[in-house]
Image 1 (cartoon, rainbow, N blue to C red):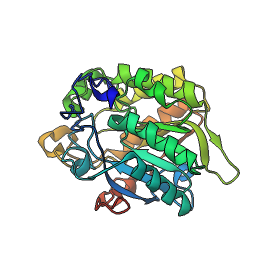
Image 2 (image 1 turned 30 degrees about the horizontal axis):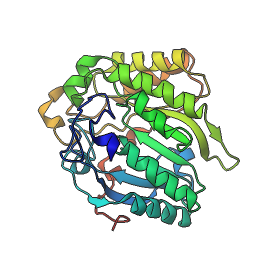
Image 3 (image 1 turned 30 degrees about the vertical axis):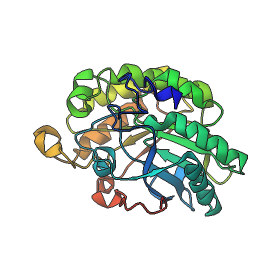
Image 4 (image 1 turned 120 degrees about the vertical axis):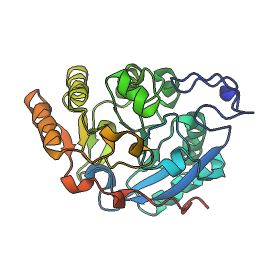
Length: 298
């Protein structure tokens, strides 16, 4: 694939020839995925009654020390598939009454996804396509997906670089994520929810609060409210569960103080947040982590 000869898909700008060698993300020139299923644990307007047609991609351009999906994001568990196979999986999920196609951790595969979505649409894919991302994106690369993605669902993890570097090895995270989110909004606009309560188009942002980072989280909320229309949804999440290598970072090797979370919600409402989601305290539970067994991929 020509676009991978000097890979500049994400802010790391590896410039590695991924046709021959893996980039920083661990991905060469083939799609690698670990699961495809009807996912019931997304936001109510995403999962609905039938479930979201989630496709979990392997490998990642971030290195989050607390990643709950570390066996696919960091260790590369998964199976190689072609763009044609990915399109077939999308069509199968549609046939199984998924409300949407939910591409989870898709960043290294932008050009493969462009090819697969075009194939799927030419063969009858009619449900919305979601780009469900960690937010560490190049706005320029995202532009190639315009018209193919109906819903952007990015994380906005950190404001301060010292945290994005320490916990995710992602320098310049906020600068790049903010630019990417504005590009996402340019492409799809504000959320559109149908009569059945299902999101069909638009931008929705996720922010998972980390232990001890209330001040950083408030800056994220500030930016969202100042930079985007009030119609854009912000899901402020309390589901942080210390996993993977979080044990090596004592300050985050614990669950979130729920009172701090409630104070962040109060703050967001007080400065003008109109549309969003919050989570109950029991959402911080390992049972919500999918089991990656290659089901739906093989």
